[in-house]
Length: 254
Image (tube, rainbow, N blue to C red; front, side):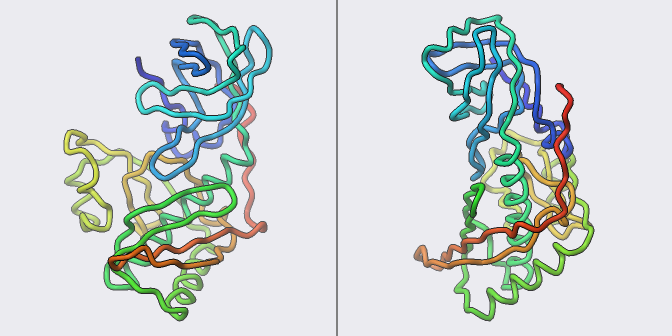
């Protein structure tokens, strides 16, 4: 059984918050739906929270996991059965924070590669209040971090669009080096990939996460820490300012 991932239709789909769905599996407190806007844990990005309005009342979604079948964790007394129809609604504030954080991660990953001898992103964790990126090989000085912060924030102040598309491995490799896009980490069986692009290839990276549609929505990026993770790997932690070009979510039910 597969769940249709409504948030992946295009960049704008991440701005939808309500959807209709049907229950296709029940495993104790884990509810599988035929379609969903809830992002599951994966790709370094944390899951969405929200609610499912069911025939038995409102259910709080506390965790979301899965790759093909997406399961929504609710209370054990949910009383849902296969075939029941629900209306899901995601927590917009949490989703939008993840969108801003994830696009900021792509931006800084691209800039570190360009500024500091092709240092690659080897890990990331996206959260609502702060996020982190692991780079290798690199040893950041305070001057390097200041250069990264200033360069990123200069771009954030500009109206630079973010868009997605489907590309083949060959198309991606013709634009960006394989080590920059971490193509070697993706299963070779996948030939067509969803790619998120910032501006005119400021960054281009295969990604199934949720993103904003313009860098103006990020707000100021502040690097708040760095930590050595051994073998030439360093982790930076960052947070985003509260002043940004806010975009409201869609109110329609899809």
